Length: 164
Length: 417
Ligand code: SF4
Image (cartoon, rainbow over all chains, first blue to last red; front, top):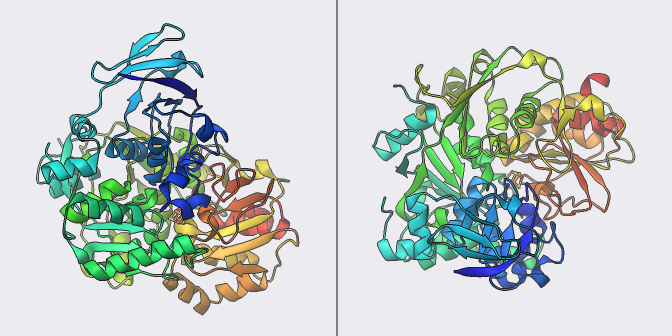
């Protein structure tokens, strides 16, 4: 069970909002990069987010670049899952490859600052603050297996190859 | 039932009946990284326990995003990549060689290939008929070692193009028009497949521009058939032997069809801060521009510089507006020098940068000031993209960019020629 606070964002949050290109010199210094995460969408985010909290976004979260540094910085900042109405394709794959759960659901039912309880196995989100409870959509089996291994690199370490 | 281009290519490379919606494991023909995604990829490859590259001769590292390097951290990243190339025997392209996607088009992509790159605009090679898609560093690290990747076979949307471009209207305008109509996530997880009489005669540089921008609608791939135009392009690159004909089947299943008649298009501009925020250039008349940037994997090719040079011939930039030009590759620059375009652009007041990404991603070489506006031929105008979240980016064709350089405000090129 994951428990934490919701940090709400709107639609079309791009990888440039999450980890801007101008900070490319920090990409080999990940702890430093994580201190700037989401800077261009909410400048105070990195200092307010606590381990276990959630990013709760609108549609098309993570559009843009293929930089895996975007979900990596989110993960390193302590975020335990990203909830969104929809997610851009490469970001989705990258997050799962890093073992960061991405949950597709109706995020309009969550308000900024709400406390959420998420049961990954049961596929449910409970908003403790407003009492809403709902489900998120299932991911494909191969993605589920990768997530269960904790990401693609551990998955390959474990299996040596893809297993469909 | 017949197959779409995506289904055809993925069936071949997975040796299975790859139908939309299925998950396949496909062999990859080319794997690449660039200098801002490569270092993480290399570390993940080393961590994965995979010992060798599956195919060093079909693995490429491109130093293009931060080249020449603006600071010591990025220089150290370059060193790491050079070292990796030396150790593994893979190919490396250095400072000044050009943007990865342009080099992939010039030297690698073949019709029917599966290409994966740690850069979202890997889709560019779809102009040549390759199923090319961007991935993150974990996926690329594993593709380096295994020579394959898993893919969900995408549903395809058919885009049927008819008619001819009116004067002053180019492939970039078509790409922006399409993205504006279907939206920034209008093709997420899907392939956009182009066909129609307007495509049959469309030259390769225009196909590459359009394929490049399909990811701005969320697409996994933007695919063109491989036809006579493809054959002529490959022959011109000394790669005639890489050609094969590739067309979708007539009875393939498309999720939907979008029809566009080129005759109805106008010079189009994407306003800040999303690519689907489009209007015609005319509607933005009077919008002051501080910097014009012509270049990138979208519009930094020889034909783009030719259009800009033709409009700027004998003219000067507006004194309040600076012009930055970055050719997409060394070969583009050499050809542009030979054709006199570089001289024309310099005389018009341009700062000409070495081949590479230049100011496109906000790392160096043209970062915008607070409140400044840039007119760019690139593919993205996200907030902060050119290094400053307080700046504004407008996207359009090289022709609109050149006309805007002269007047200092967004200008439909038909008004200055
Ligand atoms: S030119 Fe711009 S969009 Fe193209 S690869 Fe370089 S940074 Fe990316």
